[in-house]
Amino acid sequence: DAEAALESCREAFGAGVLPLYLPLRGADGSATGLTGVLTGTTSGTGSPREVERERAELIEAIIAESEDESLMERYLEGEHIDEPTLIADLEAAVSRGGLHPVLPVCTATGVGLPELLDGIVRGFPSPLEHPPPEFTDPRGAHPRRLGPDPSGPLAAEVVHTAVDAYVGRVSLARVFSGTLLAERPVHVSGHGMAERGHPDHDEDERVAHVYSPLGSGLREVPRCVAGDLCALTKVGSAETGDTLSDPADPLLMSPWPMPEPLLPVAVTARTRNDEDALARNLNRLVAADPSLRLERDTETHQLVLWCMGEAHADVMLQRLREGGAEVDTEPVRVALRQTFGQAAKGHGKHVKQSGGHGQYAVCDIEVEPLPRGSGIEFLDRVVGGAIPKQFITSVEKGVRAQVERGLEEGRPLVDLRITLVDGKAHSVDSSDAAFQTAGSLALRAAAEQAGLVTLEPVDAVAVYIPDDHLGAILGDLSSRRGKVVGTEPEDTGWTVVHAHVPSSELTRYTINVRSLSSGSASFTRHFERYDPMPTP
Image (cartoon, one colour):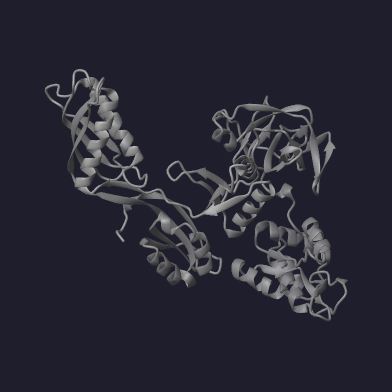
């Protein structure tokens, strides 16, 4: 439905959206060819339609953007404006962002593909008209801009990474400056290097072969010049967004900002035999897709894939299975924590006398809750040597180990001050292990007296939403136990809603927010704090 698509574009981008071509309709109503609004030519079969109104509207929009101020006057006086002049002004209007041309294309039938390619060449700005990208020296030199000069300094960016079952890692690189040659070393720098423990971006690799990609095949070529794309194999340290340059003149290009994946999917190998294949294929997927994030949660012990949405998640799971790993999904668990509801005292006694060397340790502690984010404090207030110094450290070790394990369902304890106030030791039977056990028992005893409060993570959420859907979003946030902390107008007809929402309520929020807004809303989230979880 080309007309509906055109109207949708106008709603999104404004009145500057105009068609360059309109579809010809066959007897069954399907698009069989195109009519050029500007040129008047037709391609394919079908009934041509009158395009005089669209042609006049397009010409006026082009002339309005022209630097030739007399052109509009000549046009209004009835003078014929030739096609080359109009196309040149069309290109200028597009480059300035004042005109957004629309070309209908059907990839299934091929209708519109020749016109699209022709429009790109004749009517769209050349890359030479864009400002060249800025490169910096990873070692701190001043930034500089490099144009597409094949004889200039080498500067290329890895724009895509794939993993082939036979070839291995394949890096698709765009050369902005200089010439990338086979059998030469390159310097790899970028965000991927820092994440892999190379903050100085200092790693050189040898490019053995340079290929020109053609469909799924690779044709070996001796070089790749500025402005071209090429494929490199076995450049193991390069990831999507990294910069390739001359080792003698290292350069760094800032990577483009990537959208944050917001849909978590917990995956697990179906059988033990699938575990190796799962790990191998996960590494391949993450290397190939910069919008995919892999997280191994040390608290819930889950393997979580953060995806862009349901379709993205389905594709990733299918690729895992195609790689030989049978995987299952499970509900994403949110890491909960606990703290004390009030101050309490605990008595820990570990005494065993069963012949031979025994075990003896007694300790008394006082525990009090601290403000959120304070962590765990351990204080020693033992007087008179009731517990020898070497065993005070043992009590602390036992207490901290129990804090990390938690007391219920593996939920670690947080924000507590634990004070050792008294205890007893035996000259023969006391030991490090005995006092560690006594410290753990004392903490358990204090917890029974004080009662535990379960804490859940709360995220700060910012929802970018059209005003038409504001009420639905506010109601949905309320149903998720969210607290709206403010709203602010962003653009005309758009509002940003700021709220604090429990993380457990956001597992599938990216799907719900799109559903509530007809796909128009977006949101960001980041951890804010831990809050007490309401009791059932």
